[in-house]
Image 1 (cartoon, rainbow, N blue to C red):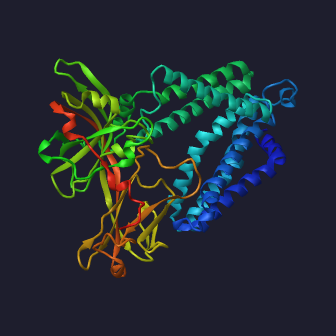
Image 2: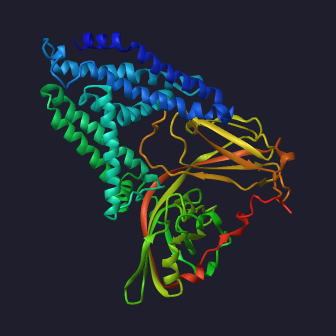
Image 3: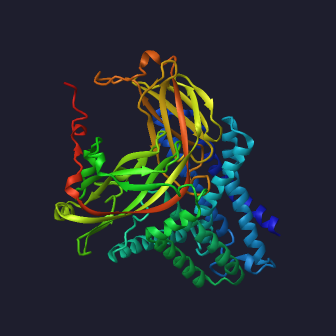
Length: 535
């Protein structure tokens, strides 16, 4: 009977199935046209966002519609009076979703990866990971939504209601003093999506079977709304329990055991000024650049500061200020500006300056006082996944798990561009460097680190993932000169080093007495005039 129900749904919905499959195909074809360097740029929006989103929307609508073919609300459906086992109806809907809704997406992803030369094993595993992410994040919630509504209009109204519930809860939590940014800008953001996926899976297992069997609609709707509220509540969990979970998931928990951080005033002031943009925005910001000495980091590794909790205390123990090293996610004192990366470069002790942002009023109140500074660090040690090389011009190389990379000169003639494709998640952190081995010289490296600590591969947007960057070899204004210039590109190569997280751990630093004004950071004024013509 399951097969008969499936065939009935197919006869009714096959045009929409083909339409959604066509959206997947168009998105894949556009991705192939865009290639490694996202050209022509006019197609970038359609190929990388519009058609993938349309395809995901089609998956959601198709899932709701297949459930509505034998809807649960109401008492006029023939499946309620015919001798059909309700378990068979539920399993038939689930089979349709897996085969006709998720199946085309899986096939297109596999074919696209194989077309680009990735191995069958890599193509299948990446398509399965991506399919599982979409199934948990979109398909299962759509299945639940379709089961408790009578029509598409009701489903849309219910979806809008859940969005309103989300917004109300966010406002309520903020009014209670809880903020949505505990994991903002960090590698722990995957936990929010994981919470959504977890409740989607649990909701399917707990709500749908009894809903089809006994049709207790009110109970099911209350449970779905309650699960949505719990997902929002999990968004507001404080940092420490979230990071404790991440520590437990560390691939090599003992790897960071030898790493220490110490205050080292002998290092003096930082030579790298903080960008002027870091001080502008809502409310503004003040900052210090705290001199630190980091020891115990492996020579080929990297240390990343995920979060620093700051407390400034008076001599009698009174707390004068409490905050984190950054103020906002994307405004003044942003996460990116406060991010600290330490690269040992073969040294056992590495100097570093940690930028800590303060609200201007708080900083003015405490900056000239002798305070006791206590800092709780959440840190991640990265290990090197090896180094790969590729020709600087017209390079074309397969870099194993890292993907398929190409190089070229950019249209302006001042950068070597590197563009990489991968069916899996792109590397969390990587460094690219333009070098000439014949003379032993290299230009300043390009480094990208977008921490993402999720313990699985796959993203919500279908298709191949992209990463890359530009390596400068010429200053169009003639103000800077590079060791490896345009005349050497024929001999030059690009060196790529990839990093992956090994251990997540915490450290505590206490500075018994410090005057913050001694280490006040100034904005980099040159940035203000960066767009001015030379001379």
